[in-house]
Length: 322
Ligand code: ATP
Image (cartoon, rainbow, N blue to C red; front, side):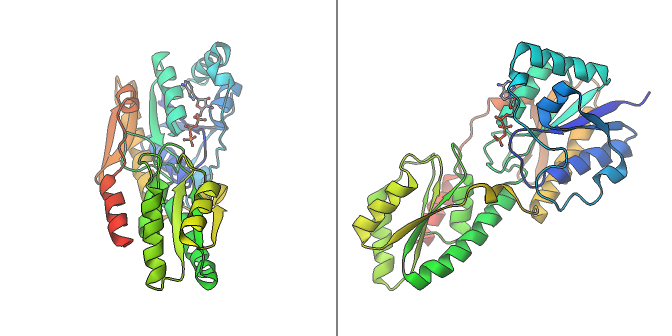
């Protein structure tokens, strides 16, 4: 009998999840596996929302943002009864291995399933880039490009009115979206949760810019930074004399057609997940990218890895913002 695998997306959606689903389904079928999609993450797993996937069920989805399998956050999965039901459903549908595309919470759910004897592989689907076991997550590059495009638009109006703008981006604990979009968007200052902000220094940079005739300035603040965007704008206005507005980008950062880089990452990771699920005796793994290599770690080890932001990018951004 053919081995049977399933794939689900869980937690916050991210652009590129569809490309990952497509890769799992097509690589699975290519390897003569039966592949099921589970709708609505762990919630759908508990409810038994399984559907058999064919080559054509993943046609024309790679370019779409979001996830065709839908996603959910499941409180029930966190209860002993709900969890037990989820384990039973995997048994009932005779699933030999499960691919989980999601963020940190979804990985923890995957680890719980592995400890209950299930075979799982986790793939990093989140725009936040906050998973320790990979240099980049699926969706991060697209989110950075979305912010970059917003910076461009905001800069046009900011320049015309000779103001500054604080742009608030996603990132409660991990400031990577702010960091990468800030550097590549030429922001005058970047504030991230990992590094205490020197607001006097930021204001000095803004005043210097103003004195040499700069018509605008853009400050990128990750949402997890202690000082609020409104308070930051107020201080900047007081200290620099420049009118300062706040723009909160919010959920636009989650959507959009994935970039080539995210599609490539998702496709490579999806096929790696299938390769791992085909291995005899494999119990739980996390797929990642290190440099340009697709790698796999033991899932529990992956969850315990420390995450460090790339301080060299912050240093470079500061140099370039003189
Ligand atoms: P994002 O990074 O986009 O928020 P995420 O995967 O971290 O995605 P969460 O809402 O944290 O999103 O987790 C998704 C689901 O995983 C939860 O709704 C819950 O069902 C399950 N989950 C989260 N944490 C745990 C845990 N410690 N043990 C078991 N299951 C968990």
